[in-house]
Structures are given as structure tokens and as C-alpha cells.
Image (cartoon, rainbow, N blue to C red; front, side, top):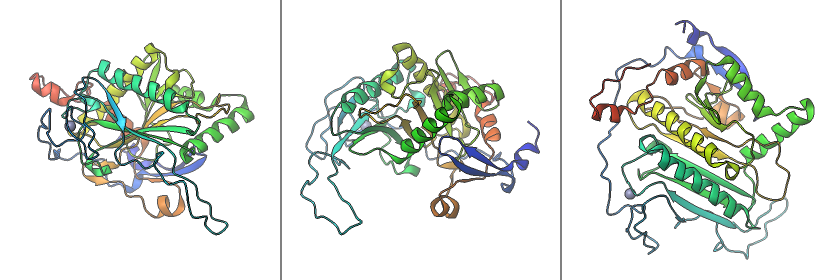
Length: 359
Ligand SMILES: [Zn+2]
């Protein structure tokens, strides 16, 4: 890649799924981060921690006891944001205000009994078991009449507020639909109506044709930094076949998705030789009786860091104006990720293998 390239991207890119502009002002950044790697305080976590609320056999704050589980373990969140226990007798506010009961289900998915692992360090077969759990939970919770949408996500890293490193995700099955997916659904419906084509399939086709931002591809799944990325190192992981929910993945597609998740999380960790933080939502359609044939399920990775220990601050443009200003070019960030080895650096170190970037 020409050295000058990263300094020249200065334009507005259309985000077709959000139907909004993203300002890419990569010329403002002095230069890509190339300094010494500062390894975050990464001591070896033990495989078991006696006061962790996710480790097997431990007593939780609610008094619940974790079984001595061996694979993935799902349980109701002890501090739910929505739940059947929420008050139903509510004070009616003055118009135009509205209120209703915070009904729904909140659960925690412990990925593994091992306190010291992350997706990047798990086996593909173990990640496939997590994908299988997503399928089952979406099917089961989505079938409940009070649940309009099943939001599944992982927050990873202290920088996004996670103090317990035990690998886990969360489920919010709510009595409302989430704004991000409403927006994406509407954009995909409008595109289909206007062009007779599928928006997400066209996004994938454009990424494949360009090729510079594609990190991984196999028969059933594709991983790329989208052209319209709002965050540095933002990545989409998607099945190629259109489906509105993760629950529609076939077994072979689920395994592909697991390989794709392993690939991107290993690249992330290898980037700065540290456990890479992110917010990772599953983008799914609602679970009521509506027609969601236009919606294409995918997984988004939204990393909060622009450089090691440098947060992307959301400020005037994002919080104030509601559009993103990106200081980095998606091509440059994709090139950095593409150059990473697909063997985790800690496994490589343990094996005594010298892994060069780009190998
Ligand atoms: Zn633990």
C-alpha cells in the first residue's frame, strides 16, 4: 500500500445499512501507529477463580449456584435490565410521555468453564458450541409472546466496562425492537423495493470485488472491514446465505461462522499483542410474526480503540450530530488486520514459533 494512501482518504462515505454519511478524515491522523508494542497489563489469568460469578461450582450474589458445567452455560442474569419481576403497576406520566413495564428476559452466556480463555484462544469446535447456543436461545426466547427481539452481544475488555475477564456474552430478549436493527431493516426493505435487489448481498459482492478489506472467506461465511466503517477496526462477520436470524444457520454454516469468528479475534489479538477489546452484537430481525425476508443476519465487531490505549471518543459529531467522524481509513485498517498471522501470538510463543506479520 502506498505510504501516502492513508493520509489522503478524506471524504464522506454512505453507510447503506444506516442510511447516513460517515466522514472519513484519515488525513488528520499524523501517521498509522507503528511504535513499540505496549503490552497491556496481561498477566496469566488462572483457569479458575473462586470469587468469579461465572466459574463452575461458584455461588453467585443471588444465592444461585453454578453447576459444574463443562461446555457453554446459560443462566438468568442476576441483575436483569428487563424481566418478569419488573413492576407492572406504573405511574402514568403526563402526555406526550409514555411508560410501560420493562418486561423480557436477560441471560448470561458463559462461553466456557475456563476463566482464562477468550474467543481468540478457544478451539473452533468450542466457538461452534457458542454459535449453537445463540441459535437455541434465539429460537426459544423468540417464541415467547412478550419477546419482540433477541439481542445477543459480548462486551469484551475493561475499556468497555467489563471487569470480569471470564469469557461471556449476554442476551436481552425485550418487549421492544432495537433501534439499530430497525434502521437496518428499513434500509434493506427500501433497497429491495427500489432496486429489486438484496442490499447486504450487494455489500458482500462489492467487498469481494474490491477485495482490499476482506479478511476471511470460505464457502459459507465472509469477514470484512466495511467500506463505510465507523470505528477503526470495525469488522462484519456474515453468513453468505441470507437469513434473518442466527437460528436459521445450518450446522455447516454455524461451523463456518465459528471459524470466521476465530480468525478475526486472533487477528485482533495479534495486532498489538494484547487481548483486544470490542463490543460484538448479533444483528438479527425481530421475532414477532412480521415478514423479515429482507433482513440479512450478521455479527458486528465494534472495537473502541484506535491505537493501543487510545480510545475513540464519541463527541460532537457522534453524540451531538448523530453521524460518525472516523480518523482512519478502512483500507488502511483492513490492511493491518490482513497482515496479521492467523495463529494466536501466545500459542505461537508457547510453541516457540517465531511468527512474522504477514506470514
Ligand atoms: Zn471465572
